[in-house]
Image (cartoon, rainbow, N blue to C red):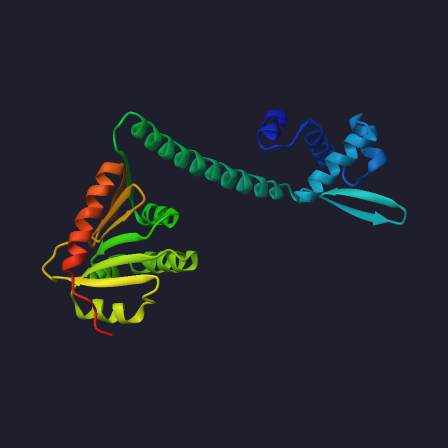
Length: 254
């Protein structure tokens, strides 16, 4: 049989667990005392290893009279460890990617350039939207409501729920349409203040301005992508443009 020390170690199982596993594989059901004899480990080491293997479902323990017998579960139970390792690795990669993105942004800001991040696909657009939930002020938004309903309805619904739960206020400019009017009539004006601009106004799917950040999302039938720019001067300029449009926008009728 191939030496398994290195393999077990890579998956968080130490030498004592590996030797106990192989002992049970060749000897069958044994007691703690018999395991100590077969492996040469101390009672404390064997007891600790047995407990960890049992927690992972690799072995079982059954008491027969006053003696507890240790049994090996089917070796395929080790696949649970593989699944856990895969998830653990995926989580680590995701955290590292987020750290790289945040570090890149901080680096660019330090060197007087805007921090630009690019997002593509539904999962990353969900992440982009979630960034605005860190807003420390009201969010200013220009969005095409009809396009949102067409290309990002589910993503937006989850985002809106999270924003409302967080109590973050938003002012929105919507190109005028019947669906936009109906939407404006359905929202809580204390958290979502809406005005209308001309239906001829061509927007991307959505642009949001908050803190020192401007995010933009674009979508069509085949793709959805966006970018996030963190730069105080640029964000201030976009806020000024928004306020100009807001002052000339049409109030909804309720």
